[in-house]
Image (cartoon, rainbow, N blue to C red; front, side):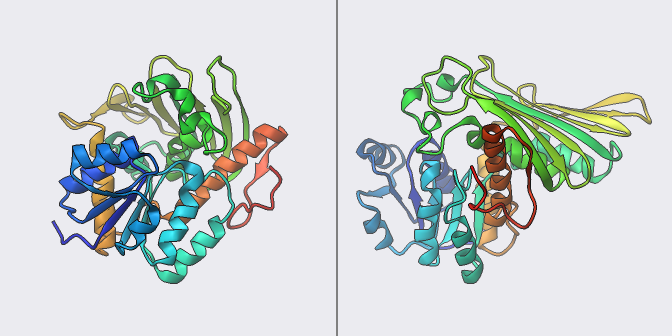
Length: 345
């Protein structure tokens, strides 16, 4: 393993923050300090992981970190990232990049001017099933792609059964919750597979009896630059976890089922299905390990970030367009480089 660059500051010690700390430790990172506004979270990190914590964010900056990992609620991502960027810290930001466009342009500008290494936490890009699909499409295994259908759903109270879902950021508009932003992985990877999106429309709302103020279901239609169509279904409601992707091409079909751990490819030429399974003993945390290893390699300038803040901004653009479409009941055109805050929400 290459030498680990510098001191790491983890901002946010919830479940994903602790996961990143564990994986960093396993990857050989030794200089870590963590901050969370909640004393019990700081205690858990110190007790369970042996990592030093600080009670105030200002104290963390005094440690002069080189890298900041932002794992706080979504609505705080950009403001915290800016605090790090102004101090010339490289950035790992959990998905989504933000819950609105405010200050995103400013962050992009600081990152570009300071030549910072950035990665946004889209761990699904490291899933072996989706990597297999990407490889098959690169090889034109199904010919010209015409459409894709992706979906994910899980009952929100089952996400973190150890805590009250009504108190989670997912349930709160102010913190950036709602299934469109929470499940932005699907928007990210359908764009990764099919290319840039030029227009979006969406139906979304709170349909269930969950005690939340955010949308619990969304149905998004996308038009891609290459003419393909995309369907994205997201929900907090399904009682049995489901996550699938189907890609339809002129010369075949690809189907992925997360729960089954399988990709199936049908070729119109052979008229047969071929099966690709996850590696033996593969576990979900491997995605996060591979993601963090990739980030460390990017910091060492050995790899190029697969999802930097600029890529993540384009995905956020689509999510915000979907939210605007659901409110306005119309198609949103995604013209220009980025969809700016001047658009009416």
